[in-house]
Length: 131
Image 1 (tube, rainbow, N blue to C red):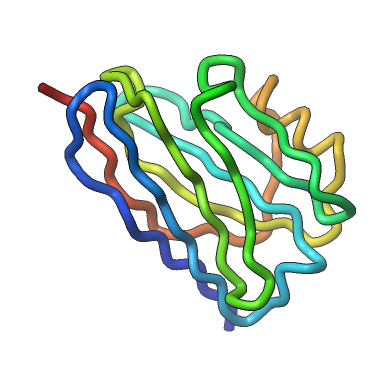
Image 2: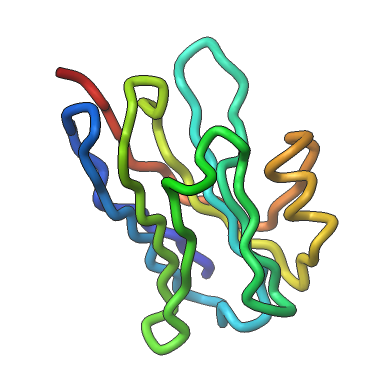
């Protein structure tokens, strides 16, 4: 059984930082593309960042470039999203997801068009940026 469990969400002031984690069980991350997404009530879920299965390239939505960093630790089978300089518009429920053999086209879709399909999803962790 595949499970993705996010953690690290919190209430933080504008300008603050957070690191989200996503522990993956049931599959080996080495074969999977990874993605981070966020959603606020009433709005469409949007892709924030992606890393393909084939290499360590990283992809980001324009609004988070230079502020967010996606990474993965194969030894822990865990995905991370380091976020800094957080702004109120970063508020949302953040989800991680994985897709077997996902490549660059998936990451382009994730971060630019929101036309994507992933195999497995977590339940999300809430990030609230507010003063």
